[in-house]
Image (cartoon, rainbow, N blue to C red; front, top):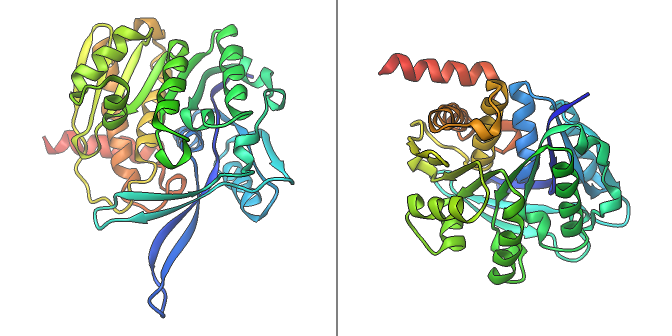
Length: 325
């Protein structure tokens, strides 16, 4: 049976700031997270068939994460629990507006960095419509080699490659290494999701219209989506560029908002039935408007995966917007 989206990469614990104890100490709430895992969970809530490939520790956190993905309806047949390594953790501090700062516990023997090419269920990838990856799995070996092997398998089976340039400075040895490995990966990518800051790093251009044009001209991309936070997003196809405004709401926690946007964009593309080489600007803009509505719901709740919206909620938000115009 064909799977809509298979994601490979990091699955981790987000310990999200959650008030203070009676003694005045900060409290942190255990939430399932990881950018690529967020995408398949968001896709599953919208009704897509999804699967996850990766490693977590055979510890209380890894068991929790496996159960969390199963509860979302994500296929975890290729999620490996490693009894020799620990599950990656991130402590997430929140500002008053819901913006985040991260502290990662991953160096050493974190399970997600130890995924090997031979660990991958290649039949799962061959029977997928989209393979979604991020650059975090490119930081260390053997996970980098596993990521490239998965991409090669997907391309050989004519699955589309979706990539999130998810630059977290604390996880890389250097910015130069991140840029080099990302630039080597992009020629194999069909759909690219990137933030404005990341696009500037890759191209040297702070204007997202210019940076997205450079990316589209340099690599064989069908779609570039540049997420711009409260300023919305910009989408570019070979036929042009469009800006989509963010849906105004009160943000509680922006963790996972970009992943929600991207999962929703991919959902809208898949259900449209349009071939990826035939995506026009009006199509990409329509997908992005749906995605912006979904992301506006995500930021209204705490955590990443727990905040991903159901399809009926996104449709209701879009109707609400249309009625208010």
